[in-house]
Amino acid sequence: MYQASAGDNIFSIAVKNTPHTIFAGTRNGVIRSTDNGTTFGYSNSGIPDSAWVYDIAIDSSGTLAIASSKGVFISTDNGDNWLTTTGIPPEDTVATLLFVNDTTSTGLLNKTNSIRQNSSRLYAGTKSGNFLVSELLEGYLFFHLLIALIPGNEQIASLVAASLGGLKLYAGTRSQISESASKINDVGGVYESTDNGKNWQQINDGLPSEPPVSALAIRVSDETFAELYAGLFKDTTFGAEIYKLAITTDAKEVSDQIPSDYKLEQNYPNPFNSTTTIKFALPKESFTKLEIFNSLGEKVSTLVSETFQAGIYEYEWNAEGLPSGIFFYRLTAENYIQVKKLLFMK
Image 1 (cartoon, rainbow, N blue to C red):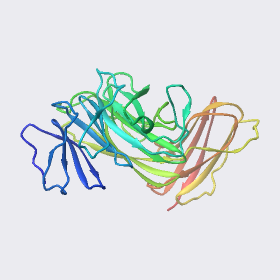
Image 2: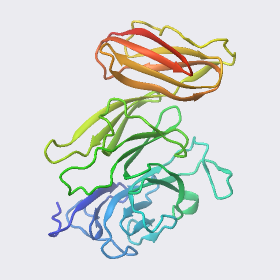
Image 3: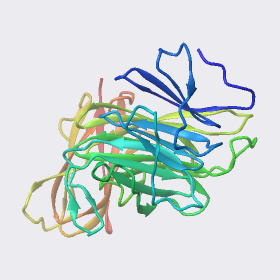
Image 4: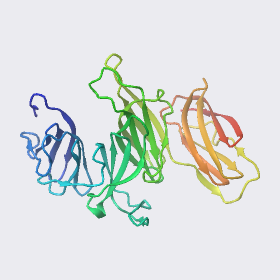
C-alpha cells in the first residue's frame, strides 16, 4: 500500500470514516491518503519540519490530534491545516494521546477550580511521566498538567479508557531508554484512575515485577467487566510478552448502617459460574484491600485497593477467563485480615 523512504519510520496509524482518510505518523510529519491507500502525500501545514509523529487520535466529531517531537497539534479540517497547542513543557515530549467523550463524568477542575460538566477531553501522556488534559470547550488547544504520574525514569507509553460503572482510565508505562537498545530496564507498569486522571493506583497483579508496558488495549464486555491487554517491551533475546488483566467495577455501598465490627461474609452464590457477590463490613474509614488467590496461593486479582468510609459494601466478581477450581478471597482493612474459600465451576 505504501513504501516509506529510506530511513523513515511509521510510528502510528489512524483511520477516519467520514471522509474516509488514512493517516500515518512518520519521522517527517503526517502522511495522508484520501483514496483508500492508493496514494499518500504529506499533510504538514502548520507542523514544524522533521517532527516525529508518535501518535494520532481522532475524536467522535472528526477532530484530529497528533503527538510529535515538536509538540501536540490539532486539525479540524481533515489534516489540511494544523494548530499548535500550548501548556506542554518545552523539555517534555507527548508520546500518547487519548480522546474521551464522557457525558456522564463530573468533569475536571478548570482554571477557576470549578467543576466543568460533560466536556469531551484529550488526554496526553509524556516521556517524562506527566499526564495532561485539554478540553473541547477550549478547542483542545490548551493543556493543563493534572499530575506527574510516574516519578523517575518512566514514560507514559499508552492510554486507554472504559466505562465500567463510571469512566476508568488506564496508563501503560515503561523505561525511557531507546527502543534501539538491546535491553531496557524492567521498570514500568499499569496504572488506573477513577477520577479523570487526578489520582492513580498501580494494578500490576499477574504481571512480572516492574513490567515495561509499551502498549495497552481493552475489551469491554459490559458495565461490570472488561479485559485489559498489556504488551511488554522486552529485549531482543527473549522477545515481547502480552498479558491479560481482568477489570471489574468497584464495590458498592449497600447499607447506610455503621457496623460495629469488621466482617467478611461468604460469597454468594457458591459454587458459582462466572459471577459471584462478596460482601464486607467496615466499622470506620479504612484503607481496604480485597484480593483473589488461586489454590497455589498466587494472587490472580486485586478487586479493591482504596479507602472506604464506614459502611457495608458488596463487590460482584467476574471470574471470566480463569479455570474452574478453588479460589480464596482475602479482606485486609487496618489490622483486620480474613480469608474465605470459594468454588468456581464453569
